[in-house]
Amino acid sequence: MSFKKEIKVKSNFSQISIGLASPEEILERSSGEVLKPETVNYRTYKPERDGLFCERIFGPYKDYECHCGKYKRIRYRGIICDRCGVEVTEKKVRRERMGHISLTVPVAHIWYFRSSPNKIGYLLGIPSKKLEGIVYYERYIVIQAGVKAQDGVKVNDFLTEDDYLAIMESLPKDNQQLDDSDPNKFIAGMGAEAILKMLSRINLDDLSYELRHKTENETSQQRKAEALKRLSVVEAFRESKEVNNPEWMVLKVIPVIPPELRPLVPLDGGRFATSDLNDLYRRVIIRNNRLKRLIEIKAPEVILRNEKRMLQEAVDSLFDNSRKSNAVKTEANRTLKSLSDSLKGKQGRFRQNLLGKRVDYSARSVIVVGPELKMHECGIPKDMAAELFKPFVIRKLIERGIVKTVKSAKKIVDRKDPVIWDILENVMKGHPVLLNRAPTLHRLGIQAFQPKLIEGKAIQLHPLSCTAFNADFDGDQMAVHLPLGNAAILEAQLLMLGSHNILNPANGAPITVPSQDMVLGLYYITKSRPGAKGENRRFYGPEEVIIGQNEGTVDLHANIEVRLPVDF
Image (cartoon, rainbow, N blue to C red):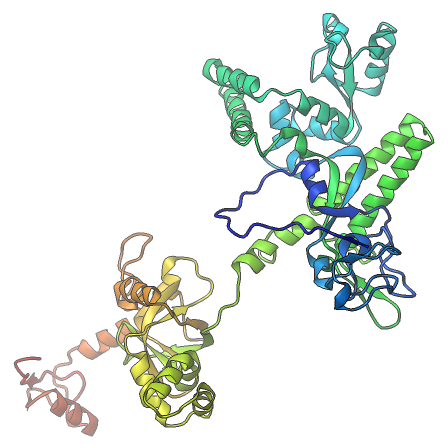
């Protein structure tokens, strides 16, 4: 019996930085090498050994049960089965354990030679199109001119197959037997192996000095701008040389993500639903194994070169399938979703899962106009408010001795007992809510309002707030959020209150201005019409005018006299 050591992740960290992973680091984080493209046995539904779902590498398929069934139950926890090699532990480790694929030949990472800015191209001073020609085994590049320097051959020169063969034939016979460090040796290559050799020869300090000198003395603005772009990439590598080595942009080992993050689910009728990543990993493993076999049997160079190019393309598809012109597609002509596709965009890991959390203490409803509201108020339906402020109401119910336990308080709130409405009014005083209308395109898209209890199911919004929210009342919906902490409540009251946000942050002009029906109404109600009914009549106060208007004794546009109180 033996025990497997788990890699513990530090919990007392202050920041996360993203950098290049070295081959050693990938191997350190890996639990084993994936050697076969198989996934699961379609008869037994058990993972195949050394395959993409292997239990030896990624952990057991069932809790505390090894592959062969020798060890079952929690009492054997931590033991590695001497028969099948599977560790007896929880199946959730299949969500965190990684594997790796050792590549037969190095492969360039698509992010660093097909993206803009082109990191490898800037470091080596090679244009993007020519760099792709080298990576995909179309052209040779001179890594070291050696004895051919006197014939005008320079480092970074591009050679066709015929040029390369002509140079090799004209070389002295013992030249290729020299050590790579010998300055007289002529070295040229193609593919990621050539890129790796060139990156390993770069001295970042010397290159930085050379580019700085070029930017200071260059007369052509275009060449100066190009040198500055290259310098920014070189400086980024220099500043992080402990954690980022340029050679690591060429991969010797590929990490395999945990199987639970790329599941294979059996369906009715013996078919399987699988993640696209499994197909992409399978392509890499099949081509890698085939290349290994071709090298072992000493296949011709032209066949090897074609297989190396295919391996490069398979790894490109795995990392970023959408960036390729000839993307890998399913039978239904759908582009397979690669690792980059699951990270980027609105539905990606960062925006959807890490930033886009679902929040408690929130509600959503259609908005209607509330003309009788004040600028800092909004109308919240009773049922919605009871649910939003539930914990506060429960506390008050217990404090007042109406109930003894939280459970009985919840029952009172859930059945909307009349006793809760007074408590709810009390709790809501001085506790603003946040109203948000999607899409939130500027800071006034989310504002705070003092809630007022209303009947019905729609949220009431002050008409002057509509411009800031870009809202109208044709079925728009708004979300309500409840700030819980004292600091959040204070911030909402001081900074986010609707009556405090009357200027447009874009230009400083007022944004809470009457428009459309409001302007028309103000114009209509203040328009004077000579000879209208009730003209020149005197009224004791505003209330009397309203009574006269309701009874039809005075017209809306008549000129009248009204006695107003001193404090009006």
